[in-house]
Length: 208
Figure: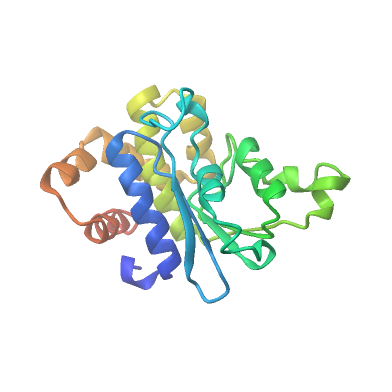
């Protein structure tokens, strides 16, 4: 599967995630779309480089995306869909619940910090009826390949986060190790490759 084969919503999410990756953040992005696929809002993880808040650790993609949604212009939140690179963390799933969004599409499960089960935690959350649907293994492994690379850069292969990636998505985590150890993503950035080409190069590793 190539970049042009995936839905345009996922193309946008992964492109935005790559922007965050290049800045040194986690490659996580989110968009909100209407029923016609129009993008109403977007957000990127900026937990290291954010200038928006003194505490950049809470500058997560999904929360920023929801904060950026103009609900005066786009009030019909119950009929919108939030696409995100990774299963939302506790903070972000809480923001989703409180925003009255009903549909979430995530590229990958997050075995370490994913918190979609909060949607069923208590009566209030259950009544919000948030549906979280995960993409296929191809997109999941692509996300883990990118995010695993960042985890390896900052915390190494002994980190509990990377180990959780390896347990749930061994293919994506193994590709992440190759990308990191051979400095392939550094080369991609230095060469200024367009993200569609980078996506396809990483996808080719899934077949080797």
